[in-house]
Image 1 (cartoon, rainbow, N blue to C red):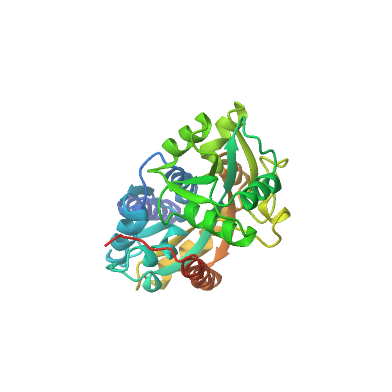
Image 2: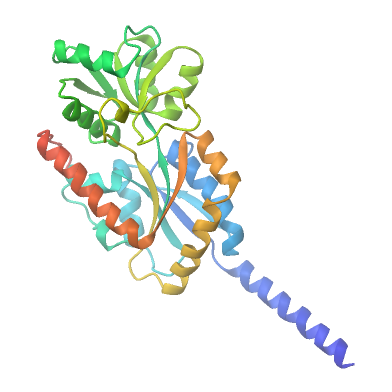
Length: 318
């Protein structure tokens, strides 16, 4: 009788726990870019893997616009109950220089951890006369402002990476902003623009088709899926322009919720499946704990802010 009672008690307890877990609200990863884009896809891959270790559903919520600042503003005002996170990227540290009247302060968001890094490239049309980055830079030095480069928009990390290349290589290139990767890539393929600072996923299909040539990647080391393509640093030692992806929580999020996330995150990022999925998307898993992430973000804001100042860049956003 006692054994039957204990069995029934354990069964009841299990049912209660399952019910409690089922009733727990999902964790929302808020993304500042449209569904189907590069950042969105990476967020969804992470959300799927996080669900198991956290024991709760993890969903992605898109709030696109203004370079990710709409999503950041939303998360800054969200309930600090452990149910909302921002899946942010490096543009968050650039935004204050572009939008001087933001309604939030990213310094007041709570770092959870870095999850990955994306890859930017220096790309040219497939029939370009330039086969190496040194060839392009030499031509640009001999003919200042003759060559232009495309980016996905004014103030984007692509734009600033191009400005960093100009500064470090001592060349003059004309910036041509586009409204997104698709039109920029289209004009690159057709030869309407001679150079583009483009994300690896946006040009990789065109590289494989022979319509685009990637002269260099902007990561510190060669990227595993395109090991034959050199880095910019091989021409300009120390050069790096690598957008990062990270999680931030509203200020005041309970320590228990943060601890659960900080425990699950490195475990999930260490799985071969997620690492392979990120590589397929032209990105790479990189974990950085909350404390180091906070310092890294401050350093990145100072780095890009210094470049904006040195290049005398101005933005007309309200």
